[in-house]
Length: 281
Image 1 (cartoon, rainbow, N blue to C red):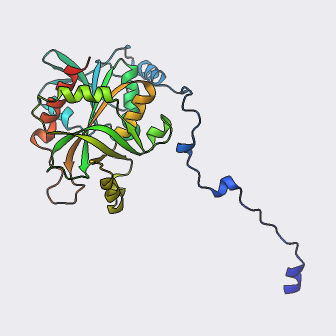
Image 2: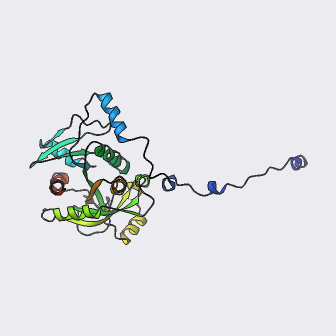
Image 3: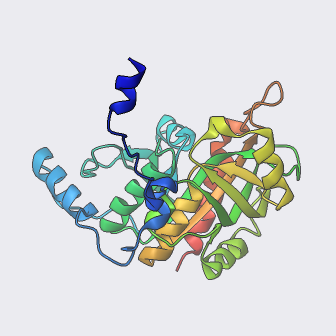
């Protein structure tokens, strides 16, 4: 048996190709960032309107993303918001708010980088000119006790969506002119607001002690799930987007965490949103 085995032709095992041996990361290997997309928000909305029998309709020039949905729920509960019957998005509802001569649109529940940018694309394709995002966030650097807000000046790109809009880089910066304009508008608002960097992640339940320590060492104030992608979209498309982190928790590391304040933080968030909307050119 052994002799017969020795007589078999030897099998040659090919060495692995160099590209196969090296881990592949398609997100950071894109070479077509300047190429327009074959699939567009305009075509999606066109077909949604056709299927739903809706007319073409513009959204307000200022729109708001409320991933937690607490702001939208407060507005609906107090009778200050009504659903836009012509919003054609397959995934969300748009509510319209009229306050002191100001009209804005607000969408709740668009959680995470990819969902937030999908909705942002559709809003700008429908007439939006300025987008404000107010997302719940976990505290990294302990500046004060939550809750308070951070005007996000730059975001760490620990998610996937931003790499489909901009070349790889550690951070994406907000539009500094827009941030300064917003910062000036908020000086007279009775809301605690800091300015600085956040960490955008796609995996909130993978925020390990090691990662948190690393982020803290580089001065990151909070962790959230949308800002890096929204700022990358804004830079790539020439859109006006400003993001706020509402620091509401310490990532569940203490009892009685996730307390957002009066009306689940909606009242202060609305003061902030409406001051920003009134200041936009």
